[in-house]
Amino acid sequence: GGGGDDSVRFLQQSSNATNSTTNSTEPTIGIGDIIDGIDALSELYDPELCRITGASVMCAIYGVILCATFFGLMAPALQAINLGRQAAVDVFDTVAHVPGIDPSSGEGSIPETLARGRDNV
Image (cartoon, rainbow, N blue to C red; front, side):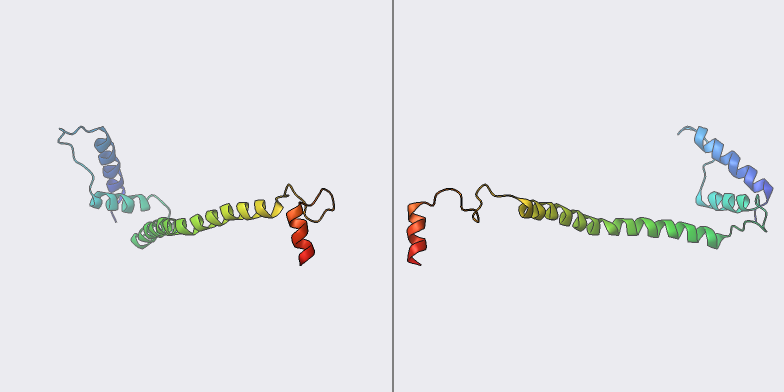
C-alpha cells in the first residue's frame, strides 16, 4: 500500500496538474500516480466496511467498458424496432381507412358499363 502520505502526494499532484500551464515544469500525473492514488484512497476506508483492491477496480472498469459496448450493440435492434413501429402506423392507417365509396350499400346508381358486365356473368 501507499499509506497516508501517498494520498496527500496524489492530491497535491492533482491540484498542480490542473493549475499548470503548457510551459510549466510542474509534474504531471501518469498512470502509476493514478494507481498509487487509488491505492492510497483505499486506505482512507475502514477495511472491515469497504475493501478496494486492484481486482475490484479492474472489475469496475471492465464493467463500464462492457456496458458501453453492449449499449452500442443495442442500436441496430432499437433501429429495427422503430422501423417496425413506423410500418405498423402505415398498416393500421390502411386498416382503419374508411373508403369514400361503400360497395356494400345499395345507395347510388350503378354505371351502365358495370351493370352490363354484372348481368352477363
